[in-house]
Image 1 (cartoon, rainbow, N blue to C red):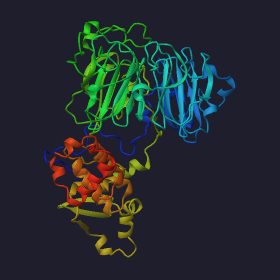
Image 2: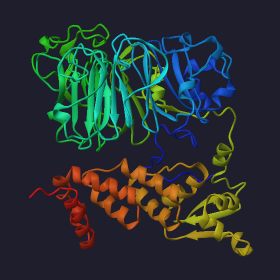
Image 3: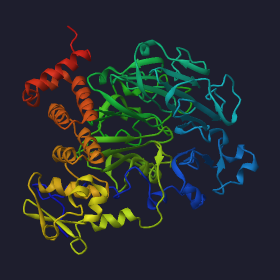
Image 4: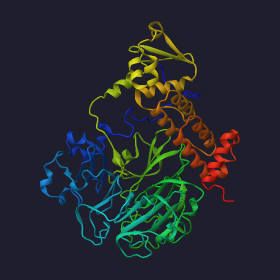
Length: 589
């Protein structure tokens, strides 16, 4: 077979650790085997599951949501089968229990605490709670546990998070509500009294629209639409990231001023440490570092670290695995450094001291407490996602985010088609690009692409079809990537060449390929290329990419207007950009 395109250095364009073709965003049987808990279930139920959420002090409990909108739980904890009638056990899946209250509700997100207590969010914004309630973490006004998922009074919720014994909810209006254990101020009410029902946070969050919430065991976090980070609660190990030598707890939200020049896109919260990902792919970390979970050997706390434990007394669940090595903790954010490209995804969970990240090239990195061993700098793994890291390296083995999967027990048709790409023995059409040949199959191309369906119609010249089709408008790597996409649904191309592939997708009216290119380009945006990518998005009518590039440029406007790419904008595009920037409030005077 013809070899895939290479870079000028001779390196393959494919990442060192590439995802299985056709399994992006899903879990295969080999990946499923990493979660031993699922071995308790029969194939009939597993084939129906759309996504799962694994939780618990031992990673031995889970909630499963099926494609036909049924919800099951497995395990033997407070929120598992042990609390539900034995009559429910006679359902598909053997040891699974159907949660009748959630069936048909279209559950889209789950979160759990250490009790455990659980929150379930539906696509209509309804919130259900159940499980342990000794600290009012269910928000039902008392400390009585709930044996079944029960509808909360809080409406229009769009995101949820749990600490050890407290809960957070973000509404569609951008407001944050908190309830439950408050011994370290993690509810943000200004006191340390437990909060029995959802309470809206005010103070610095007033008139600020929040878009993400997160929680360590006894600390809480919010990220605004402007990319600001706010924190409150336990600060024994510096997990609030606000600096200072005392590590004093905060019972109201405080803004992290050290990150004010950066736009934070997402957070991942460990037991007592936090990871923050910027829109430029930078990864920052702060808090406990007793197991290397900050990914740095040289971190230093902001002040006299010897007193870093002050104010942390009485924080249930706020410890760092028995270690009080605050001299190695970071009380303000530090940059996680690695030489393998920008980060595009991160993972952490309040149950453990493990950290994980994915680079733009598809490499999955792990650090922190991995299989009981402290790893103080990111290491490259053979995994395919951050959840894989937590399945195999974290204790307990729990999901750090929703686990989407579709079991696949046999070699699929998609995998067979993938193997047929560029196979000269079976191909019936050949493309010549830049003097190189790419072998394909007319039937597959016609099925997958309207352009080829029209080209290879019944009036197609038989003598021409037996020859070689010359392609002159696109380069060999770009056309290879296009044909490979038709066989695999994957785009394996450098971000720079993705712009040319976007041009091809636009010419051939290939909407799915266009979406892949846009995602690839988004993950490669920088200050220097933001306006070049914006111009490409305008040229190729990629509205979502155009909006993304515009918002990125607005967040970094002072630096973006000083780049060569900005100077090279044509007059019409420049005027349009400036009008949009003015409408967005970029110019205050």
